[in-house]
Image 1 (cartoon, rainbow, N blue to C red):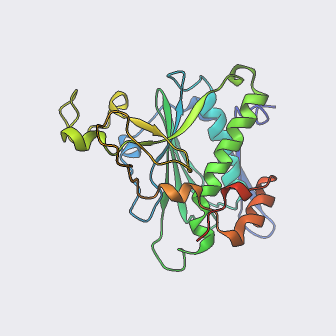
Image 2 (cartoon, helix red, strand yellow; image 1 turned 120 degrees about the vertical axis):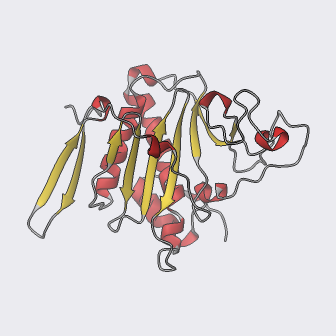
Image 3 (cartoon, helix red, strand yellow; image 1 turned 90 degrees about the vertical axis):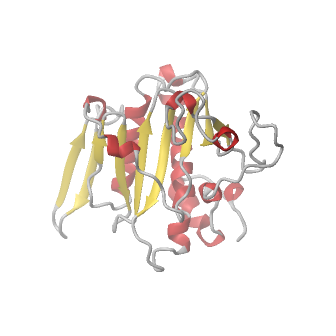
Length: 246
């Protein structure tokens, strides 16, 4: 019953042909949170950080543990053999049997930050299957947020946007006006822009009408044509609307 309602998460992995180990995690009970987790940054070949920005000004109570429990189960079902690193309002999970990608989730007051970081730079890893993992992660998160609004009564009015951090604001002044820092990461100072794959990013605070380029943003929305059928079957619904020609 606790697993059904997301209060605990089961992580299973195969030790041998006849032996399987199971571990249970309780995300809501975690209290420690290392500062290094928030300092993790994607490399140039990774997707840019993506933000689940909640329009009511705060992440609904209990949402993050629920979402985290589903992520743990999802990584386990994908064959991960490495248990997740779980912290208070943060986690690092491992995707794939060879832990090719790290999935980092960081929960703040008004958003959940998502980082997908590749653990290997070899040419073999940079295949079509590895390149589309970002889109697969995004679809999984959006799909589970929708299901939570149907299954959890207090989340029925959930409102959120997919966003990226605005790259234009700090370029105008060179520093954060409030904290006088060129690398300010304070949550209240972070300007987020809603992402729409069919529209250019424009900062409303800027006097310049030029579109903002965010390297790696397109990877969250790219599905390779050869993988659409496989991804659709895995997620149990059609993905044609996410296809981008390459």
